Image 1: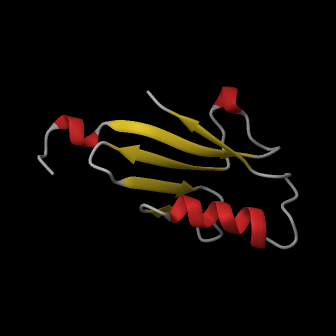
Image 2 (image 1 turned 180 degrees about the vertical axis):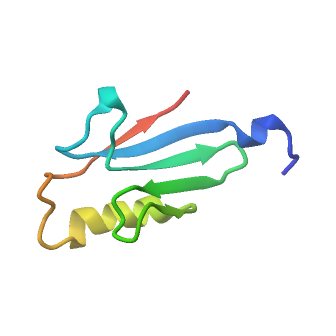
Amino acid sequence: MSGDASDAAVTGVRYALNAASDRDAGTVRAAEIRFGHGGALFVDPLYFDGIRLQGRGAYDRWLAWEREEAAPPSAFGPIEDRTWTP
């Protein structure tokens, strides 16, 4: 990592929507922010102990659990996966 500003630049955001989400208001179920150095930050604001912050791979694990293993299914409907790139 060279430490210059381009390393910290956001290169993309993956985010999950459900029936309670409002894209216009910026409300999403969970998100993963990707950075120029290859790192990622997963944010789950509805985690039962508070806001969950994790690294690379956490979004994929969370999404798989929400779609395949969550029982009972979420009261807010199915998860829709989206990606934004600058």
